[in-house]
Image (tube, rainbow, N blue to C red; front, side, top):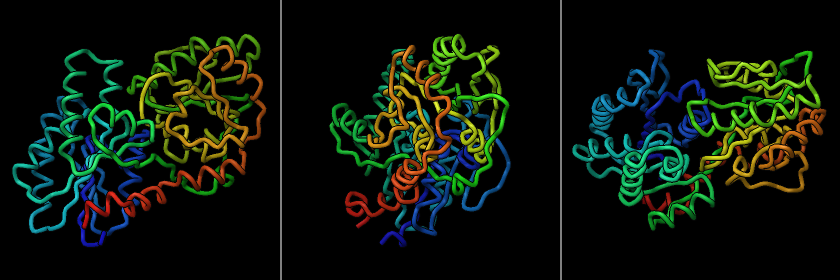
Amino acid sequence: MIKKYNFLVVTFFRVTDPYSGSSEVSFNFFKNIPSKKKKLFQFSNNDKKYKDVISIKIENTKIGKILNLKKLADSIIDYCKNKKNIIIVIEGASWVGYSFILYQLLNIKLKNIKFIYHSHNIEYLLRKKKENLIITTLTKFFENFIAKRFDLFTVVSKVDLIKLKELYNIHPTILSNGAQLPMEVEKIKRKKFYFKYIFFCGSIEYLPNLDALKILVKEIMPLVIAKNPKIKLIVSGNKYLPFKEKFLINAGFVSKLSFYKYLSGSSLFVNPIRTGFGSQLKTINALAFGKTIIASKLAVNGIDINNKFKNLYITNNKNKFANLIIKKINSKRINKISKDYYSKKYLMKNIVKNFFLSKKLFNLLK
């Protein structure tokens, strides 16, 4: 049944050559759709060509995206000419207002199209914590509209499923985040330094990541350094960081392979994030890699944790967090049993496959 459908995945940011958790999730979802009849439409800031990808080159700004939504819609409409059985998946990792406007533009010209909203979090609850009243109110209106009008709305965890039901009185389906490791982790050459380091990743353009990094740099690491001044903090995902502490090393933007090399060479993976919804791909990647992890409660939100593995430590207390870093700094580089369990459980290929075999999707396609 799936083979007769044309699948279009739409993103409002570049996902090819993934550079963030959201771009990685969206690109791996697209790659693993079990059909040859698929196309990715994306806004992009470069001219690089990719197979099965149509890129609309824009500057990565909110105004740039809004001004080019008509161009994106026209590109999709043109592609859909003379095609039947079209499923459009809109990736919900950007402001939901873009999805609302694009849907209106497409709905004028395209008929008998099925729409799926692949949410990465519950955006209204996220905006409510950080944005002004106008943006928050608009976000709730747009998200509610999409929840009611789209043929299928996905969430990343049971936690988000319950919250979305409460907010919009709909019945979403779960499409978990997942990892896509490039090779056996034991074969990845680790970054070697003369010091031991803990590793944190994530773009600080995403405010929850910035908050987490502030907690690390200003509250947790000073407690660590006071007892063990040789430990360093390495951060990836940003060209510049607004911190100048001597213990902090900015790895910058790195390729996925380089990311795994830093992860492999680290003594610990840390994630003290305190705001946000959805599930943290960075935590899933570290679990699939078999790392010893020290994290906040929110960092494992929506992740099915197996408590028999003793390489994950959860606390929101900065003193306990710092003491765990000091205590666990000599942990085994890779916990193979944990790695084998989580890399299989959260393999994106299997997650996408199971989604396309799900009853809700079957009912949508029949």
